[in-house]
Length: 171
Image (cartoon, rainbow, N blue to C red; front, side, top):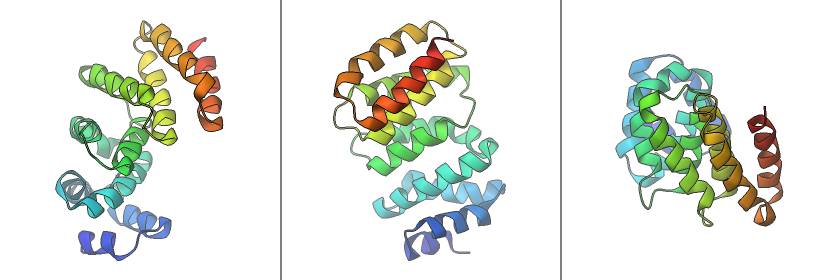
């Protein structure tokens, strides 16, 4: 399969799932996908982000060696929202190494406090922060404060996720 051609052929859930199944647990195929995600043309990067997310959800071990590059890509200025959304989405499914927890937490806090960031990115960021807080209980208070400040202005999706996150933080 010519991965780049397949990504460009069609932008649909069906195509993203088909490519995800083709990659499976194959590290070489996943590396080819990551090459496109990290340095491809904008439309390819956008579309490959969704596939990276689906692969990471199904096979989290594939993501682990690429975590620092995924986090760096999500934090780049001017990157498409699809990259941010799918990068943070995939972080929900993996164990974030201690060495990256600070960078990931800062990225997620930045997303939560930025009014131009889409709702899905904020919702995924809350979940990632709660997952980090399981290992770093000192973060719980700070996460709670940021979420409480968002609630009065949040959409229904943000309020729903915030309620679940605040409940998890109180445990």
